[in-house]
Length: 440
Image (cartoon, rainbow, N blue to C red):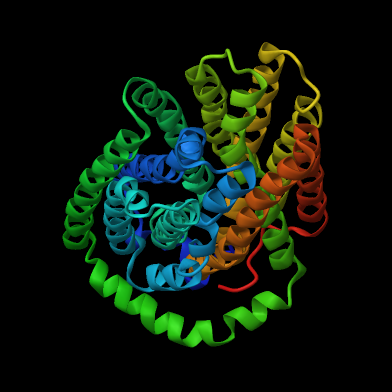
């Protein structure tokens, strides 16, 4: 929202909630918490990408076909939507840091338990159901992560640094996948698939206690309880009509469609790229295709946030900034996807995968920041809503890809479908998206 004019003679100053610096991090705190959120998000994504990495090994051990592997992989998204909206609302009211460290501890424990569960069952159906249930629980507990992070950034970061902060923190999804693809691949090849769960789950437990320490220290320094009390009182008044106001605006629906379409495509890539490379190029080293594309993607997210804030700093509108970044992202993602299914060269496929993931990473300077643009005081709730729909789309995409592969054995059909959905996301947001506030 643009800053209203200040009439100095009358000493009238009007500021928006996002520009109230009393509850914002200073430079050192912002750097500290950006690092903490980056690590937490990296490990969260590492946790959710364990199963895609080990799916072939687990499937071979228990005799699953691709459709059954798709059911297990997609079960994450059955649990993922449940606490998105609630997590966002609670984070808006009491602080995203408090929600975040509790959720991190719980999913980490689930990761540690998961490898032992299928061995209690002696039928293929039993192992599928057991692992699907554990994936469901993982999704259930990780569902609050992004709404709580979005809410925390909205509450603590000034508007001039929001896109950069979001870009850095959300780039951790690439870093987490990179960690699983590199360290996880080494552990998988040298030991077994179970050790991957134990390692990442253990690191998650450690990160949860670190977050808890700094969250409590922040409470003392910023007097967060008093600030949270004020936000709760404000939210009681505003939240009554917030959803109704949102539902009347095309910009909200554009954000919802664009974000959910992006997640639909992203999780096809996350869950099926390892299998695509393993089957299409069986002699290739797994660490190469599980690491290199994600290394390339990492600077895309950070650069997109910096570019978005730079455009706003040069007096371009917020809407122009978000749409420009979204255009670069969607076009950079879609066209490699249309080509990769037809590639017979490992090197060319690796290059296309890297370009596609770099394009996807650019999106973090666009739609993920937009909830803070259109609903500054309800960013956690808005992100929870759009991510709830996106979670359903993520499951649909993961399962649909598995079904298409089972029926047609055609990777080109899977990736062409993903490319088409990406172009839909681009058109909807460019036409109907906006960068100004719908609700305060």
